[in-house]
Amino acid sequence: LAKTTQPISMDSYEGQEVNITCSHNNIATNDYITWYQQFPSQGPRFIIQGYKTKVTNEVASLFIPADRKSSTLSLPRVSLSDTAVYYCLVVWGGGKLIFGQGTELSVKP
Amino acid sequence: EAQVTQNPRYLITVTGKKLTVTCSQNMNHEYMSWYRQDPGLGLRQIYYSMNVEVTDKGDVPEGYKVSRKEKRNFPLILESPSPNQTSLYFCASRQGFMNTEAFFGQGTRLTVV
Image (cartoon, rainbow over all chains, first blue to last red; front, side, top):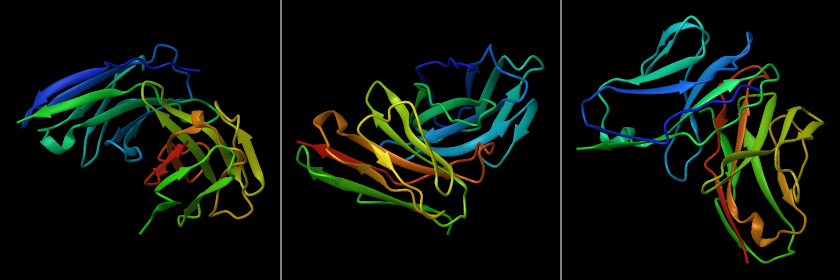
Protein backbone atom coordinates (compact mmCIF):
# COMPACT_ATOMS: atom_id res chain seq x y z
CA LEU A 1 0.00 0.00 0.00
CA ALA A 2 1.64 3.22 -1.19
CA LYS A 3 1.87 5.84 1.53
CA THR A 4 1.85 9.52 0.61
CA THR A 5 3.67 12.37 2.28
CA GLN A 6 2.81 16.02 1.68
CA PRO A 7 3.37 19.26 3.58
CA ILE A 8 0.90 19.88 6.35
CA SER A 9 0.36 23.50 5.42
CA MET A 10 1.29 26.16 2.87
CA ASP A 11 0.68 29.87 2.57
CA SER A 12 0.31 31.87 -0.61
CA TYR A 13 -1.00 35.16 -1.91
CA GLU A 14 -3.67 35.87 -4.45
CA GLY A 15 -2.46 35.67 -8.02
CA GLN A 16 0.51 33.43 -7.28
CA GLU A 17 1.09 29.96 -8.62
CA VAL A 18 1.04 27.30 -5.93
CA ASN A 19 2.84 23.99 -6.20
CA ILE A 20 2.12 21.23 -3.73
CA THR A 21 4.42 18.24 -3.85
CA CYS A 22 3.54 14.78 -2.70
CA SER A 23 5.95 11.89 -2.29
CA HIS A 24 4.88 8.30 -2.80
CA ASN A 25 8.02 6.21 -2.85
CA ASN A 26 6.24 2.86 -2.83
CA ILE A 27 3.90 3.53 -5.73
CA ALA A 28 3.01 0.40 -7.68
CA THR A 29 2.93 -0.05 -11.43
CA ASN A 30 -0.86 0.03 -11.64
CA ASP A 31 -1.38 2.91 -9.23
CA TYR A 32 -2.81 6.26 -10.29
CA ILE A 33 -2.12 9.56 -8.57
CA THR A 34 -5.20 11.55 -7.69
CA TRP A 35 -5.76 14.90 -6.00
CA TYR A 36 -8.80 16.08 -4.11
CA GLN A 37 -9.80 19.46 -2.66
CA GLN A 38 -11.86 19.88 0.48
CA PHE A 39 -13.46 23.01 1.92
CA PRO A 40 -14.49 23.08 5.60
CA SER A 41 -17.54 20.94 6.35
CA GLN A 42 -17.87 19.88 2.72
CA GLY A 43 -17.06 16.59 1.05
CA PRO A 44 -13.81 16.27 -0.93
CA ARG A 45 -13.96 17.18 -4.58
CA PHE A 46 -11.93 15.44 -7.30
CA ILE A 47 -9.42 17.76 -8.97
CA ILE A 48 -7.17 15.75 -11.23
CA GLN A 49 -5.73 12.30 -11.87
CA GLY A 50 -2.58 11.17 -13.65
CA TYR A 51 -0.35 8.20 -14.30
CA LYS A 52 2.83 9.75 -15.65
CA THR A 53 4.20 12.95 -17.27
CA LYS A 54 1.85 15.92 -17.19
CA VAL A 55 -1.89 16.28 -17.04
CA THR A 56 -3.76 19.57 -17.26
CA ASN A 57 -7.41 20.46 -16.87
CA GLU A 58 -9.32 23.68 -16.32
CA VAL A 59 -8.49 23.72 -12.63
CA ALA A 60 -4.93 22.48 -12.21
CA SER A 61 -1.91 20.72 -13.64
CA LEU A 62 -0.31 17.57 -12.35
CA PHE A 63 3.36 16.86 -12.93
CA ILE A 64 4.68 13.35 -12.49
CA PRO A 65 8.37 12.54 -13.05
CA ALA A 66 9.46 9.39 -14.83
CA ASP A 67 10.13 7.44 -11.63
CA ARG A 68 6.63 8.34 -10.33
CA LYS A 69 7.90 8.54 -6.76
CA SER A 70 6.50 12.02 -6.37
CA SER A 71 3.98 14.32 -7.99
CA THR A 72 3.28 18.05 -7.95
CA LEU A 73 -0.12 19.67 -8.07
CA SER A 74 0.10 23.13 -9.62
CA LEU A 75 -2.63 25.70 -9.08
CA PRO A 76 -2.22 28.73 -11.37
CA ARG A 77 -3.01 32.19 -10.06
CA VAL A 78 -4.76 31.20 -6.85
CA SER A 79 -7.55 33.24 -5.35
CA LEU A 80 -8.98 33.43 -1.84
CA SER A 81 -11.51 30.77 -2.79
CA ASP A 82 -8.71 28.25 -3.31
CA THR A 83 -8.11 28.19 0.43
CA ALA A 84 -8.79 24.54 1.26
CA VAL A 85 -7.18 21.24 2.16
CA TYR A 86 -5.62 19.35 -0.74
CA TYR A 87 -5.19 15.61 -0.60
CA CYS A 88 -2.81 13.50 -2.63
CA LEU A 89 -3.93 9.90 -3.07
CA VAL A 90 -2.35 6.90 -4.68
CA VAL A 91 -4.97 4.43 -5.71
CA TRP A 92 -3.68 0.91 -5.20
CA GLY A 93 -4.61 -2.10 -7.24
CA GLY A 94 -7.81 -2.71 -5.33
CA GLY A 95 -9.00 0.85 -5.88
CA LYS A 96 -9.49 1.89 -2.26
CA LEU A 97 -9.20 5.66 -1.71
CA ILE A 98 -7.09 6.38 1.36
CA PHE A 99 -6.96 9.99 2.47
CA GLY A 100 -3.93 11.19 4.41
CA GLN A 101 -3.71 14.40 6.41
CA GLY A 102 -3.60 16.61 3.35
CA THR A 103 -2.06 20.04 2.82
CA GLU A 104 -3.90 23.00 4.25
CA LEU A 105 -3.46 25.83 1.76
CA SER A 106 -4.11 29.35 2.97
CA VAL A 107 -4.39 32.07 0.32
CA LYS A 108 -4.04 35.60 1.59
CA PRO A 109 -5.05 38.85 -0.09
CA GLU B 1 -27.40 17.13 -12.09
CA ALA B 2 -25.04 14.38 -10.94
CA GLN B 3 -25.07 14.22 -7.19
CA VAL B 4 -24.81 12.24 -4.00
CA THR B 5 -27.48 13.15 -1.47
CA GLN B 6 -27.22 12.46 2.23
CA ASN B 7 -29.90 12.93 4.86
CA PRO B 8 -30.06 14.33 7.37
CA ARG B 9 -27.43 17.06 7.23
CA TYR B 10 -27.43 17.51 11.00
CA LEU B 11 -28.52 15.12 13.71
CA ILE B 12 -28.35 15.19 17.47
CA THR B 13 -29.32 11.97 19.17
CA VAL B 14 -28.96 10.14 22.46
CA THR B 15 -26.80 7.16 23.26
CA GLY B 16 -28.37 3.89 22.24
CA LYS B 17 -31.11 5.21 19.99
CA LYS B 18 -30.85 3.53 16.61
CA LEU B 19 -30.46 5.82 13.62
CA THR B 20 -30.01 5.64 9.88
CA VAL B 21 -28.23 8.08 7.62
CA THR B 22 -29.39 7.76 4.06
CA CYS B 23 -27.26 8.13 0.94
CA SER B 24 -28.49 8.16 -2.61
CA GLN B 25 -26.68 8.72 -5.92
CA ASN B 26 -28.15 9.37 -9.35
CA MET B 27 -25.15 8.42 -11.49
CA ASN B 28 -25.67 4.65 -11.64
CA HIS B 29 -22.33 4.18 -9.91
CA GLU B 30 -21.32 0.73 -8.81
CA TYR B 31 -18.98 1.65 -5.97
CA MET B 32 -20.20 3.44 -2.85
CA SER B 33 -18.57 4.06 0.48
CA TRP B 34 -18.94 5.78 3.83
CA TYR B 35 -16.31 7.87 5.57
CA ARG B 36 -16.10 9.63 8.86
CA GLN B 37 -13.96 12.68 9.42
CA ASP B 38 -12.57 13.70 12.77
CA PRO B 39 -10.12 16.48 13.68
CA GLY B 40 -6.57 15.21 13.53
CA LEU B 41 -7.60 11.84 12.14
CA GLY B 42 -8.63 12.80 8.65
CA LEU B 43 -11.06 10.84 6.52
CA ARG B 44 -11.43 7.19 7.42
CA GLN B 45 -13.43 4.65 5.49
CA ILE B 46 -16.17 2.87 7.43
CA TYR B 47 -17.73 0.52 4.87
CA TYR B 48 -17.79 0.19 1.12
CA SER B 49 -19.86 -1.60 -1.48
CA MET B 50 -18.70 -2.74 -4.89
CA ASN B 51 -22.21 -3.43 -6.13
CA VAL B 52 -25.70 -4.46 -5.04
CA GLU B 53 -25.61 -6.94 -2.16
CA VAL B 54 -21.80 -6.69 -1.98
CA THR B 55 -20.45 -4.83 1.05
CA ASP B 56 -17.24 -4.98 3.02
CA LYS B 57 -15.60 -3.39 6.02
CA GLY B 58 -13.35 -0.39 5.71
CA ASP B 59 -10.89 0.78 8.32
CA VAL B 60 -13.28 1.67 11.15
CA PRO B 61 -16.43 -0.49 10.83
CA GLU B 62 -17.10 -1.14 14.51
CA GLY B 63 -20.52 0.11 15.59
CA TYR B 64 -21.83 0.55 12.05
CA LYS B 65 -23.87 -1.44 9.58
CA VAL B 66 -24.68 -0.88 5.93
CA SER B 67 -26.86 -2.40 3.28
CA ARG B 68 -26.96 -2.21 -0.52
CA LYS B 69 -30.30 -3.50 -1.73
CA GLU B 70 -30.46 -1.09 -4.65
CA LYS B 71 -27.67 0.38 -6.71
CA ARG B 72 -28.52 3.98 -5.92
CA ASN B 73 -28.88 3.70 -2.13
CA PHE B 74 -26.34 2.92 0.56
CA PRO B 75 -27.67 3.69 4.06
CA LEU B 76 -25.44 3.81 7.13
CA ILE B 77 -26.99 2.32 10.24
CA LEU B 78 -25.93 2.93 13.82
CA GLU B 79 -27.72 0.30 15.87
CA SER B 80 -26.68 1.70 19.24
CA PRO B 81 -24.88 5.02 18.82
CA SER B 82 -22.28 6.06 21.35
CA PRO B 83 -20.61 9.44 21.95
CA ASN B 84 -17.42 8.29 20.19
CA GLN B 85 -19.44 8.13 16.98
CA THR B 86 -19.93 11.87 17.09
CA SER B 87 -18.38 12.90 13.80
CA LEU B 88 -18.85 14.31 10.30
CA TYR B 89 -19.93 11.58 7.91
CA PHE B 90 -19.59 11.50 4.14
CA CYS B 91 -21.02 9.17 1.58
CA ALA B 92 -19.22 8.80 -1.74
CA SER B 93 -19.79 7.04 -5.02
CA ARG B 94 -17.77 6.34 -8.14
CA GLN B 95 -18.26 4.51 -11.38
CA GLY B 96 -16.14 1.49 -10.74
CA PHE B 97 -13.70 0.06 -8.32
CA MET B 98 -10.72 1.27 -10.36
CA ASN B 99 -12.09 4.73 -11.11
CA THR B 100 -10.47 7.33 -8.89
CA GLU B 101 -13.00 10.13 -9.41
CA ALA B 102 -15.33 9.92 -6.45
CA PHE B 103 -18.35 12.14 -5.82
CA PHE B 104 -19.05 13.02 -2.21
CA GLY B 105 -22.25 13.99 -0.47
CA GLN B 106 -22.71 17.19 1.51
CA GLY B 107 -21.97 15.48 4.79
CA THR B 108 -23.94 14.61 7.92
CA ARG B 109 -22.85 16.10 11.18
CA LEU B 110 -23.84 13.67 13.92
CA THR B 111 -23.72 14.40 17.63
CA VAL B 112 -24.40 11.60 20.11
CA VAL B 113 -25.00 12.76 23.67
